[in-house]
Length: 293
Image (cartoon, rainbow, N blue to C red; front, top):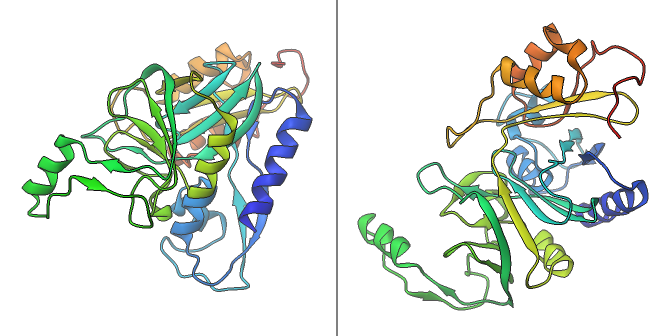
């Protein structure tokens, strides 16, 4: 199910040319062992948002054969036109080539007290079945927590790096898979960027040593599609480096040529809900006078 969905998404992206939006709105057929948390991690949606969309209480159990509405649309940042773009508050990784979106993947990033670095980097190394040389800082954390201090973890199912690792020019930071897929779409790492194992393999095939990696911090995104529709996406601000206020969203609306929406009650509702996915502003004016290509 997930593999087929990922394939369909990539085909749609390639066929559609330059896009400002990734993801889909679809029905998902629940299978054994899945939960709102695991589905949220896999699709890149807050579990609470997934529950709300389906009229469920947060943390409610789901059953095999149950159908869930999954809306995992995300606005593609305009920070770069080529290479990898990672937006920390969005917990999404995008791969672009000449402005064309090749793939998008939900990720886990650094927790607030161990943040993922922001800036421009490059892929320095590519490794399959890596050995994890545990950084001294993490060894110290293990010792402080009373855990056994581990120096190295060999390749295999217990390796937190998974089977694919991309080392960055950022000190001790990489992009890699995981042996805990349910940890994706959280602020939980020691600064690294973590992907589902299938997504790590897909990304590994899309990039080379030297590929640009831009890590940005944008908790609020706005775009106007060629159809004229305006979408707003609001996330948490875990590192306290951005602004998620109505005023911040309205500034972006004006920059996107959607100044007619400033003061809209619908925009205020989207900001308050902070669902973490692209939401259509229903009160927008019709027409294409100010649309963005």
